[in-house]
Amino acid sequence: MPAHYTDPVALILIALMFIGLSAAVGGWLVQKLGQPAVLGELLVGILIGNVAYWLHEPIITVVREGDVVRQIAIYALTHTVTLVGAAKSMLPPGPETARVLTALGSEVGPRAVGVYLFVDALSRLAVIFLLFLVGLETSVTEMRRVGHRAFSVAIVGVVCPMFLGLGAMALIMPGMSLAHDLFIGGILTATSVGITARVFHDLGRTQSTEARIILGAAVVDDILGLLVLAVVTGLVVRGTVSVWGISAITLKAVVFLVGSIGAGIWLTPRLVPRIRRIGFRNVRLLFGLGLAFALSWLANRIGLATIVGAFAAGLILERFFTHELEDEHSLREVLSPLEYLVVPVFFVLMGLQVKLETFLNWHAIELASILTVVAIIGKLIAGPAAGRGVSWLSVGIGMLPRGEVGLIFASIGKALGVVDDTVFSAIILMVVVTTLLTPPLLGIVMPRTEQKHPVPVRAATTTTRSPD
Image (cartoon, rainbow, N blue to C red; front, side, top):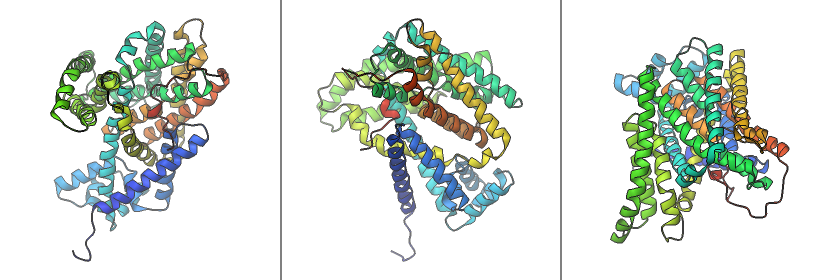
């Protein structure tokens, strides 16, 4: 082997080790403060990305540019130019672009692009995996039993933030397209109820009426949020907005979810036992991930977001792999180590792409503040929809956190070019604020009680992972 040989995977290995260690430390620290680990992973990414950028570290300087790095690489390959030449053609002039050009032109520039492309691909897989896990923790039977209160809270909690977001964007950024405003409104509809579920568990209030309404509404919210994402993504890709277009995409999303879930629930108990009798090992793991990847690919083929397919796969397998097989470990337990390894990559990468310098102008601060206020008001309005006999304020606060769901929506918008750096950073700030506010506010409005019969909380694993 030549003395100058360098394995191209070596730098990627160091990057993954660095991301994994940073995520673990960040998650551990915020859990000590009573916050979900996902918040620490996001904050540590923000810290590392901006400190490294100010220190002119070339690899982080390239990575924090996000999906534009992939576009630069594609342009360089298709137009037979250097990375620097491609970046000059695609990036606006300015001091930030000059720093990116310097990093790309350095000795580690091409390797930095390689690191980003790998980490980005891994983070996209992490999102698919994350929504598959959310589906595994969402019972189809529970969806049919959530009741009118939970359904009402979910509907109001999606409709109000959407229209408030549309109005806010029309006032703040009047020159943007309707598709852009719809996407921002769609991001505001997200709810990450796993954080709330963990708080209810810690307060000993899991059995309360408020907790049951919120957890039930979260099931409906998951479906509505994915439908909103599917519709808005389709409109952005097609570039046109019409009643027929919205109806067609909505119908396509509903047919895909209902059809795939119905077919999967019917087929899975008939197919898996036969595969098991052949003698294949790890059928549960291979079939589960295989179905998630297949449905994600199919969703993409028909113009929907890949995560819609992953979520559908989780719903299909939730009951079968939890109750109907006699294996010692559930599919959720089998996938747990993979979750700890892969999912933090997405959150750290999202943090790395937050550019704090975008808040040096008043417009960015104004945008972040208004989006945060709209996000809070939009969910608080959902509280009264719970009806009489419950704390409306508790229900509204419980619906506040956007968590990983808001981050997923924002990352898709950034990849589509709908969300620019300023809006993306403002959305991240909104996610952080709503996530931080929920635990202490719920602790104030709902006093702690002794829980005699604790029950597992739904979806807590997607936002609050244990430190071990």
